[in-house]
Length: 145
Image (cartoon, rainbow, N blue to C red; front, top):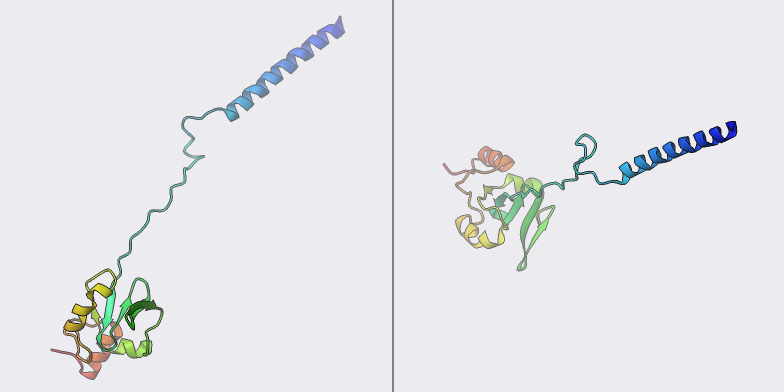
């Protein structure tokens, strides 16, 4: 009879353990309505940031510099190109030449005809010059009063 009690007790323990294990597994697989905020953070993609271009125009070279993109934009034949360096002039020479900060924030192409009329080559623009171009022009006395 002792063996029968022992077998019955072992069966009950096994049943309890099986139920406990089944309960734990069911809890792991079950649906969770709201995840714990400290444990789960949903992925949120970064917001797109629209950066407007701001250009500086160098009339003597008909060249624009995009401050935000660090690119020089100019025409090659009838096409507009953007490159990391200006064409046919060194950056230092370009920076030392008269320049004008533009007030448009899109491509220079649709504005170029008006810009060229307002700021022809070899004429110092009456608007403020930028950076080194301003300092160099003042040092040489090459600015309008």
